[in-house]
Amino acid sequence: MEKTSCNEKVCKRCGWCCTNLGKEIDLTEDEELKLKKHIFNKVGVVYIRTLRKFYLALSPEEARVLKNEAKKLGINLEVLPNKLIYDKDNNKVIVYDYYLNHDSCPFYKKNLCTVYEKRPASCRQFPSTKRSYMKEVEKFIKKRKINLLNTYYDETVEKCREFLKKSNATAGI
Ligand code: SF4
Ligand code: SF4
Image 1: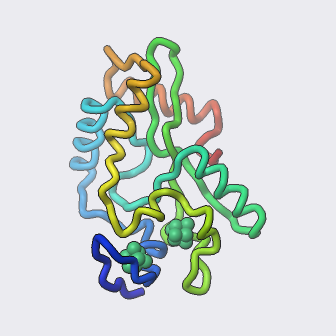
Image 2: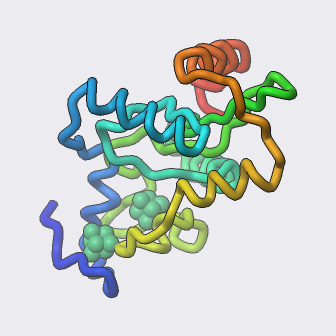
């Protein structure tokens, strides 16, 4: 599918972004790890998915809404955890958000979004990409007074993996 002029103001409804969710990003494994560690050190969040692909982020509420819509439409939807936060004081892992694990959005049919009225915030904002996810995460952590101190990246990733294994969250929400 050809991407039409996607400027910061007008969506031409070419469908390119809906059908290229999993587009690969030019990043080596080492660069990816460095970037993940950098984000963790700066904000305290662990990206549990790969950063070597684009993705569509979903808040827990958006994930629930899309799951329901998929059920109604008979769509096989895979929604997986995206960013995780380790709450040291309470020794628990919080799933901050999710992502749609599809290279092409399963709601995109016949050149239309079949969940248009209920589409996630990221889709509403496109083509603008000015949203600052990291600032949103920072606010979330501050508001809940989550203590992230004295945790290390590898240790935190391990805790997040254990949590996902126990809660079976890798299978979706
Ligand atoms: S926002 Fe998506 S659908 Fe709209 S013009 Fe850009 S790539 Fe195409
Ligand atoms: S939810 Fe709709 S607008 Fe968003 S990626 Fe899917 S088809 Fe496109």
